[in-house]
Image (cartoon, rainbow, N blue to C red; front, top):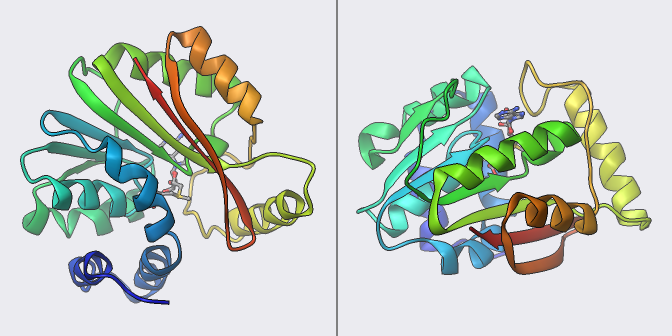
Length: 219
Ligand SMILES: C[S@@+](CC[C@H](N)C(=O)[O-])C[C@H]1O[C@@H](n2cnc3c(N)ncnc32)[C@H](O)[C@@H]1O
């Protein structure tokens, strides 16, 4: 597996992370960064504000800022541990990381990232969040979703088992709802179109053994 210059830059950014967190951060950069970056690149805007919702350690928020320094980038996550690690990188990147987003007072977002976070939200919570995102986006703004692809496949059953185990072992951090809420591509399309979004692209893709789906929608 070839490590790109972008991955090397990200490694350097997190060199001061606590050892246990660093293992998770580096694993994410090694195994998940390239396949997500490939689909994300075409949607990084030229200007404006980007919100990475459920940003974790802020890898993709930092990446977006690396690609276009002119952007204002905000990363939000409910895990204080992850946001604390993300904040250690802010000096170098200028990305703002927050662990609270009570009022969701945005009306100028060009791009919102929801990368592997929606499975932690219940069906109704997904709808509520996507409605808020819709009104916070500028006209033609984009929501970029990456999630687990729910199906009858063996891959999905295995992923479900592994993700449940990780949730129990707190690999995703503390304070998360104790369940995983997968939805099918059709359900995603239904929620998004009912909210007013237009589907731009829907790409099922397996990463190693993990079935994934990328859904890109425009306001
Ligand atoms: C699998 S990680 C993905 C992190 C990041 N998006 C990435 O791709 O590296 C899922 C993240 O979602 C966060 N999360 C879970 N439920 C959340 C919620 N209701 N609001 C915000 N973040 C949440 C977790 O704390 C965790 O950092």
